[in-house]
Length: 133
Image 1 (cartoon, one colour):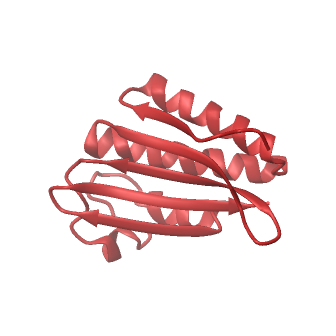
Image 2: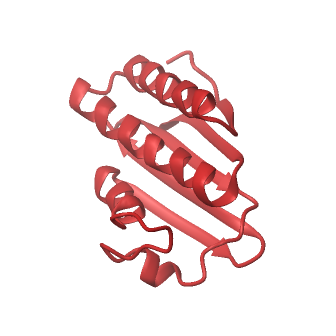
């Protein structure tokens, strides 16, 4: 695993597409099976779309990580947008403040093995998620 951390600034649909391609490349290089590569790419797509929709700009950070017995990929999505008023509500299926189906953050949590979220109104949001081989 020769890859190092990758950072993709998210501020357009083009940067969203770059983040998905970079995710696929890194996940494949770590040796994740194709179904897991697709899950991680889907999670990154959702996180990057949230950045664009709610904060307009932010960053996706991808890094290889090592667990006790297996490698994985860590995804960090952060922004300095409006923050989430109620993280507990946002983590419930079908809760949406943006007129969507409300499956984004709960869906990301289901797609990944580890999931953490921190958000503060007026300061932004940071999601960290990992997928293990």
